[in-house]
Length: 383
Ligand code: HMG
Image (cartoon, rainbow, N blue to C red; front, side, top):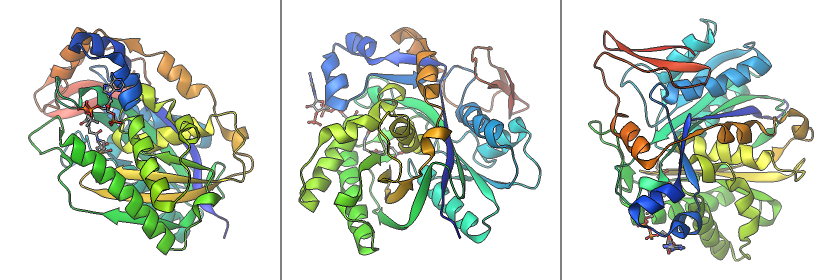
């Protein structure tokens, strides 16, 4: 059988952007703390008629527009900002995209790790039925309370990934390194719309998971460090990837080269934390670079608080550059409408999910919108 992996990848984000310079000014913080200290410049904020479903559907639409629906029999939607405790967000997407009825849809959760879990499940489905393709959607809105240390690390975004045999972009290798530890570093109880976090513990738990996943990958017969040309990490804030990677290089006993990692940060510095989508938006940034990575091995590290980490590797396919849509994500980011700090905080206060009937104003210019709640049920429509 040919290899299995990532055939295509599309990204979506929120309608608005908050520049961290503006937040720094409001909070009386040196902007360098954000740009240099945590490595972030801005974060995306959804419009009142956007959420994980509309962003996920926008990213998935790009994939369906390019490849059609043939062979897609499974949609896996990974999120930790689900809009319903029972119905999978992917079922709304199924309806919005008019997917055929002979498609199974399910939602997956383990903090930011859910997207990678979905990709692993997709690889397994395609291994069993190589003629099938699996649509993976990872979408999240990262929300913390305002006036907390975590406020500048919010964000919003989605990635849609088409997993298939004989992929155009990246063939995923079979060995994977995994690491699970029961840690209270970050969580969101059912009665909260914002996450609770022990910031320092979360940083060390991420580092432990990265090193632990590396050791497991090595034990599973994974490649040597020197055989990997690029690493892409989950990026809650981009400095996190640097911190973790520095520790890994000490662990392995190799020099640390910051500049090799920073190239996968361009989009995430702008979207903020996108939880399940973060790693895949980082991958999109890497593939959009001018460097020719054809035939090279890259590593992808996913971390979900709580916690589960997984490190996988893949071979960038020879003709990947012909299949990229370079400029697409940059245009999306540049098109976002800036918010003042007051306007962002107003949206933040109104951002909690509700079952009260409500109509949402038409703001988004994305392909789909959240129209509001009627009879307690969320209503979505084409914009
Ligand atoms: P803080 O209290 O603002 O941190 O919280 P700080 O005071 O330690 O400052 C941060 C860095 O800025 C430090 O650098 C300072 O030195 C530097 P470091 O020592 O770490 O290298 N700094 C400056 N640099 C330049 N110029 C200056 C300046 N001032 C200070 N003037 C924290 C930071 C990340 C903890 C907070 O934002 C937070 O709690 N965020 C949310 C949690 C988080 O993102 N954790 C990441 C790991 S967990 C994870 O990845 C999972 C997650 O995505 C959720 C999921 O899985 O679902 C979060």
